Image (cartoon, rainbow, N blue to C red; front, side, top):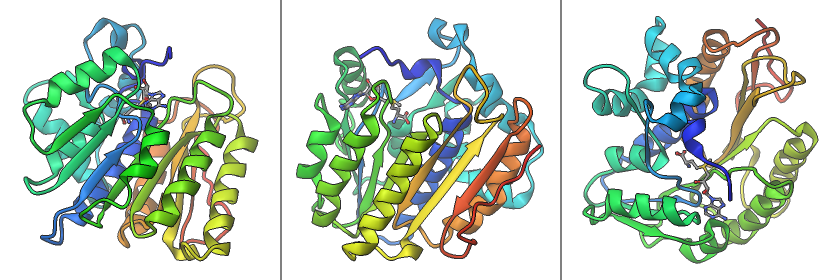
Length: 296
Ligand SMILES: C[S@@+](CC[C@H](N)C(=O)[O-])C[C@H]1O[C@@H](n2cnc3c(N)ncnc32)[C@H](O)[C@@H]1O
């Protein structure tokens, strides 16, 4: 397990993933009833941007830092508001820290809500546990998040969000993700599931997306309007070097998410472009099934 999220914290992929996560969590807060957040691959919770790991490879400068310094039209601001609220609360002065998914949940969820975090890396799990050991809402397990998920659903609250955000260190990560999903969803069709995946091996990500959607529809676990895919790439996807694109597939998204992403994605593609060929796409209920692509 060599993957260290600190190298990537706050990059373009985090901004999109965390904006979606924060919106999904905020949406569930519209009802008083408690809910649960389940994070299968939690990381260490929050990231010190000045720390040596982040400083050697400051991807956040091309991500969250640019988002914060750009003019944000009101629809973009609305889409980003829950995430940026957390970032602002962590950074009363200059930008020095960035939230991971556990910290976003810890800051947005209420006293009655619950948070279940899985992290397999020994030192990271310890860091996570230390960070949240005084928070009675949060349970940290040093376990394989894929294997744990099956036993974590449905949560007692019957409402909630699952984030599956693996490191993609291994070639068969998509297959593991698909297997875990196929075991969990039949047990809990009503949850909101967010799957993050890189746009690196495009054949593999397409196979995951299409395979998941076809399975959900065939088995009647979800209808097409309950599946949303949103991707962002900051330069040509064929270009060499660092990750150029990534995105999420969301099952049972809040009904407001698609419209928010229609405002956010083109703005992110333009604001965070790192070269020729940046773009975005979204497939959802109201959007055309064909890809929506814009290049800068
Ligand atoms: C992309 S990072 C997670 C980032 C985090 N979700 C966030 O948004 O801030 C992936 C994490 O998964 C951990 N990991 C790798 N394999 C795992 C597994 N099978 N189960 C649980 N955690 C795992 C890695 O140590 C790493 O910290």
